[in-house]
Every structure is written in C-alpha cells, then in structure tokens.
Length: 135
Image (cartoon, rainbow, N blue to C red; front, side):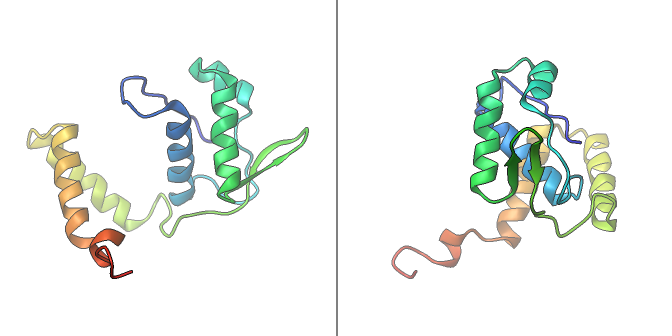
C-alpha cells in the first residue's frame, strides 16, 4: 500500500501531491491493478490533511481512469502506468548515480537541475516536437 508524504513547503497543492505520488507508485509497479488505495481516513490520520483533499485527489485519479471507487469497499487501482518495475536494473544504475552525485557534494536542487536538463535533451516535450502551428 502506498504511504503519502505531504510537503507543505513545496508550493504544490496537497491533492496534486497525492495524485503525483499515486502515479509514481503506479509507474514503479508499487501499485498494481486490484490494489486498494488507503482510505481517506487512513490518509488523514497519517498526514493530518483534510479528508476532502484526499477525496479530490481520488476523484482526479478516477477521472483519469487509473482507479475506481467501490461503494463501501474503497478505491482500487484499475490500471498501471509503469514500464519498469521498482527493482529494474535501470533503477539500480540510477541509485548508484544518485549516491555518486551526493558524494560529489550535489544537493537535491543541483541533481534536479542536472537531471532535468538531461531529460530535456533526451525527451523533448510536445511543444518542442510540434511547434505552434505545426500540430
């Protein structure tokens, strides 16, 4: 089961953090079709957020077709997003790289910037693939 971590200083809306963390768990294979998400009450007890915030996040995930609410039973995963399981060789390589980056004195923001620039180089956005007027 996923455990949500809310960063109140991030500037990202709490419900968006729940959506993002759920999607990350789906991508990493930590959540699979049929798994139950924590109840709103369980999330509230663990994070001290408003239950309506949890419900808003779950409605967004349901709207995207990722989960489904079953009255009286909970909210269940409908489909996954992942191409790579959490124990993939690529993850091991990335963990090794992250350890080396930290040992080299980089902080999280440095790593975010470096990794973001590499992602931008190798994974162009739709705006870059289809400049305005070319779509």
